[in-house]
Length: 485
Image (cartoon, rainbow, N blue to C red; front, top):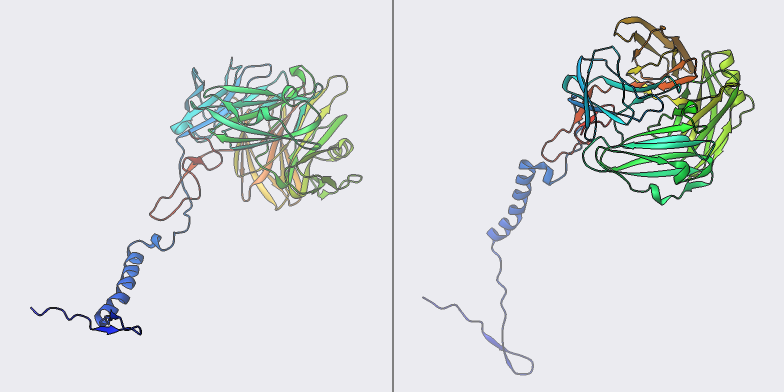
């Protein structure tokens, strides 16, 4: 075997012998492989797994059957009854919280009243009893009512009190076995009210926690409260009082989120005071306009100028004269529009010798909704702030007998109303086209009750899972609310 040829020494400029270096010249085959191998590899990767090159766009979740639904009812004011019904099925539901549990049989379209339920309670519907489950706290003695709702991640309460004359209690209910955590943010006339005691409030599993705002964050001004659920699930409710007795108490319905257009329905007649409360959670000044949305048109009332709301603050405006004049002529609501998203509330204290506290509600658009109705003279209230629309309204008595089905039409920028039959215990409202804001006002011999219509939870959403894709919504989230374990 011939030994490899050694490099020939050469002399440097100094005369020393050094080894000469020789660079090997690459062959054409090596150059071709160096170019083709990376190209073939990239083509193979793209052909076998496109997600390695670029991720696929998010895939919307798919609608699926709802097999479990829990709605949370607040503690009683003066009566411990809970009313339950279903717009879809007949069967048994559980009433539970922690170690306390009972069963109740409900019939489709009928109203079942479960007595002796003083504390907070979770109504748990499974399988066929999950879609269309509704429940409510109805207190005839206090002329107050509140629909029981699935747990949500955010709650906004506007027009809250934390003083001796006007006070409010926040109730947090944990329907699950594990602990839940909430952050409570309070807005006042001069900005955010710093209260460390309501940051990171932990509610143990199967329990309820009450926060007395007058004791925790005393303040003479009207407030707005934002509850954010940071861990687990919580139901939140607010009891509003104008004295220390339940006779002058009412539940303050929450708003889902701030908005630039808010419809307030459930204005009341009679002498008294009406306070419009507007909260601006943003860091910029908000300009707010208030209009009356009546049965003929929407108009700006004389004497009510544009309202300026400073950043992260609450402003109160007396609208007693505006509301009294508007409701005296025709059925009306208020349309509150703003340059930035705000939350709104309208508190009314009416009556001469006996005072009654009631709240107009921020009515959200509903496509198919149901509501349990307190005893009294009930009126369905409808508004069309954007486009014309129509709804069908079906009323049922306590035994589930259909009393009537009516069609109500509301033209754009007007409101409409329908007197419900005397024995109405449940009402179902279905929009024929675009969802419309709606509420029910009930006049009793003890006062006025106003309830927003609650969208029926009929199905859930599950993520679409595939290689390289991502769902835009978490699994187990109902289409109209977060209510699954």
